[in-house]
Length: 308
Image (cartoon, rainbow, N blue to C red; front, top):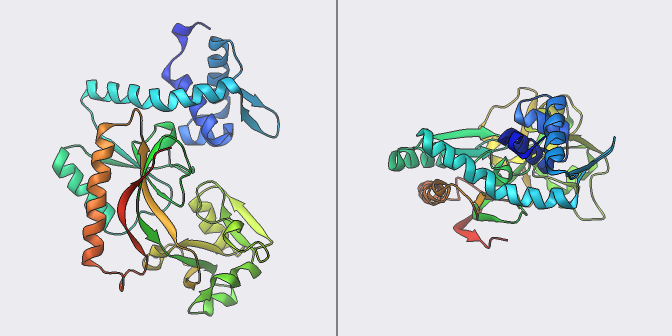
C-alpha cells in the first residue's frame, strides 16, 4: 500500500483506536465494523512501514511511533476537516457531550451563538472520556470532572452537585437524603468510560468494595434500574424523569464535580473559542437570574485553565 492510497478514513480509524485503546469501542464510535476498522489500521501501518499499535488478545497499546502519530493527528485532522468544511460552505459547530446537558444555559448559549454567527450548532454525544474533542470529531466539548489532558484549552464554568441513583426496589429509595459515606456499603455502578465517579472519590479506608462496570450513560441507568447497585449522577437529574425504576436522592457530604468547556489549543476551529465565550456569558447570565439558593451547585467565575 502506497502513501497515495492513505485516506482520512485510515487516519480517523487509527485515532479512534488510539483514544479508546479498544477496537470494539472505536468501531462503535465511528459507526463501522471491527474488521473494517482493523483493516484500515493495518493498511496505515503498511503504508508507514511501522507498527503503530501493540495488540494482544487482552489489550491494545500505542507503540512509540503510534504515540508520535497520535499527537500529530490531534492537530492535523481538525485543521483538515475545517478546511474541507469551509470549501463546501457547510460550516457547523459540533458540540460534544457524554451525559445529560445542563438545563437552560446550554440551550441559551446555542441560540445566542447561532444568532451572532449564522453557524448552526450540532449536538454530538460520544461515550468516551473527552466526548470526541481529543479526536477532532467535535469542535468543543462540555465535560464533567477533570479533563486531565494536554493541548487543550479548559474553561471552568462552575461545579455541579451530585445525587444518588437507587433502584426503587431498594430500601434506600424511601430516604429523603443520603450521606456520601453511606454509599460505601452498597455495590456501586460505575461508568468507567465517561462517568464522573470512581472508588477513589471516597477515603482510602472506606471505599465501595463491590463495583459493577459499564461504558455509557444508558447502560449505567439500566443497571441501576435492574438493582445491580447504586450510582452517582449530576444533581440536574432531580429535575428529569429518566427512568420509572430509578429514584434520585440528594446527597450531603458529596464532592462537587467541575463543569468545563474544552477545545484544542492548536488547530481548533476558530468558532470554538467564540462558542466558549458566548457560553460562558450565557452561564453567568443564567445563574444570575437563578441564584444559588434555587440551584445549589457552587459557581465559579468562568476562566481558562492553563493549557498543557
